[in-house]
Length: 266
Image (cartoon, rainbow, N blue to C red; front, side, top):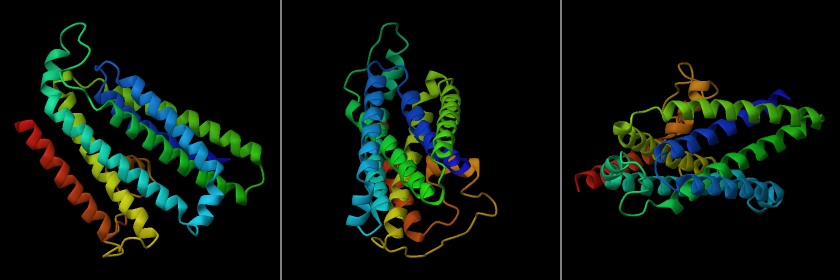
């Protein structure tokens, strides 16, 4: 029961943080919520399909299915987040001014609504797929299915509540800071997702690690701690990262930041 609670809590919290960032970043833009919610629904459907075909997928890629699946989803989400944050940097000032007027529905130009939907889909599909994978592994070691279901439900509720609390904090950021704060958070999120995608590919030998363990900061901040989990979601924190992870993180961070600042200057 406890293992199921921890697994589901962690995955739901990660999912809630990403969705909360998307909701908070577009909180006053008409039409965004339905796209994000639709994306979350598609992600849930994708996770269920992954669960249904999990054994087949694992067998097809010799047990590396989860890692390849995560790498593809994380890479896609990173690209889409980068696209969204660059769009925000171009239109954020106009949107901030227009949103002060009652009845404003959106700024000139169309927010890449489809990208918001796909990021939400990727987040839910990835976290849901991971939860299914880990629960499946845990059930091989435990016989009490009822306890697993109960633990999973408790984890779902606890993760959802904490996600809502974090979202409530995000939406209290004053409007004049919304685009700057959210832009920075989304850039870090995109870079973190890209580095996690690289980490998954390193684990299945599809990318070289370059340096197996660049450093070990687990004695300061463990991956298993709450803050470590939070930073893992937000910036891809890993207490023992490989050289490839850091290269991908720094390169992605630099490229997206450059486009972001270039768009702001224009």
